[in-house]
Length: 287
Image 1 (cartoon, one colour):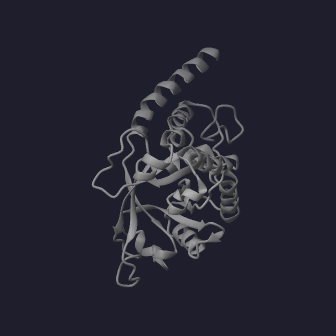
Image 2 (tube, one colour):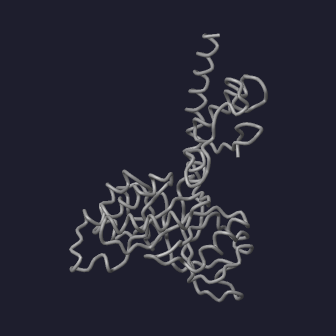
Image 3 (cartoon, one colour):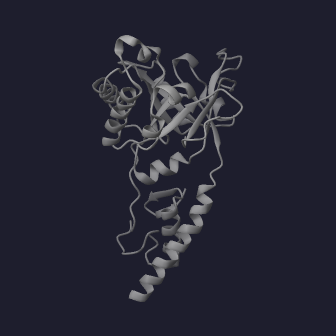
C-alpha cells in the first residue's frame, strides 16, 4: 500500500507538471468595465458579443454607483462573470481602510469571479496640499488591499501608465496584489511589471450598451491575461467556497465515485495544476 501511495503521488506530480504547462497557456479574453455612465445596460445583448467578463463600479467615496445592483444582478443572470472596482479618493491609509469597509458592506453575500479593484487616478491625490509622496499613495492603496484580503477577497489595483510609472510603486503593489493597467495604445509599452489586465480603449462599441437602443457613445474595453475565475474559485476567494478533497468521505476518493482509483489521481493532478474544478455532490470535476 505504501508503494502504491508513492506511485500515486509521483503520477500526480508528473500530471500536474504537464497540465500546468497547458494551464499557463491561457488565451487572453475581452471584457468591459461599466458604471452608471453606461446607463441601463441590456446584458442579454452584451452576451452576444465577444465580452467574456465585466468589472462593475461599486461606488466612489461613500456613495454607491446607482447602477451597481442592476449591473450585478443582470450580468449574473446572463452568465457574465464579474469583478468590481471602487473609485478612490483616499489621502490616508485610514481613509483607504474606510473605503474598503464600504466595499465590504456593499458586496456582502455576492460572488465575484474577477478581482476587487481599487481605482487610483483622481487628480485630488496629486494636489500639493495633501503632500502625498509615491510611497504614501502606495501605502494607502495597500491599506485597502490588505483590508479586503483579510476578509477573503482577491484584490487588485487599477491605474494608468502615468500613475504606475510616476505616482505609485508598481513593484510594491505587484508583489501584494493584481495590477490592471490603463494604456490607450495598440500595445502596452510596459514590460517591467506583470499585469493581469489591460484597459486598451475608452471608445469601445458593444451591443447592449452603445447601440441605437441605449445611445451611450462608448464603453471601456479590456483584455484579461489571467484565468481569474479558476484562481479565485480554486482559492476560495470572493464569496466562493474552496474546493475540498475527498467529498465522499472515502480516503483518496476525490471524484466521489465510491472508490479510490486512477481516475482520482487524474482529477487531483488537474486540481494541483490549477484547472477549474467544480465541487458538487458528485465530487471534484472539471468545469
